Length: 180
Image 1 (cartoon, rainbow, N blue to C red):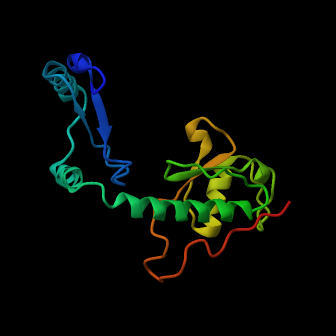
Image 2: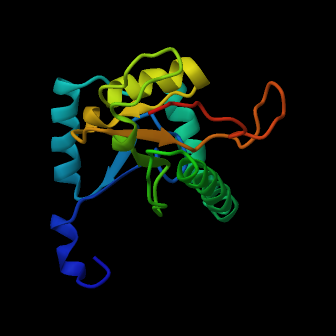
């Protein structure tokens, strides 16, 4: 609309708070546009989904009104977390991932671990087995890549505190082992 104000009546802007405000999983969004279109969207939504609870609406409003000054520090923290994950993955035989900008997670190729045996002798047959092994052996929760249509990958979220809140130790101190 800044380039061509005449587009105002046919421009819809849609956004959400999940990414910028780190309110992942809340699934709260908003839209701005012509009144006729917003009314139509309200009618459609009221018949197809439930509304967000007031418990979620109040912090969302606070986030939107609070500004984005915190982002510079938060982006630095995310970059540090990303680098820790990528560096840790690079030290693990059979795993590979690239450092990506603009995400809260690393998408790790675990195809090099498929067919490997765990210390207990179980064979890792797919990304679900690998995800389960990480959960059982290292208490690390990941999402299997096949849930996103990409087999032999896992998604590791890193939008978390760098220190364990229970013991104040640095995250990433140990990693599980598999043998070939």
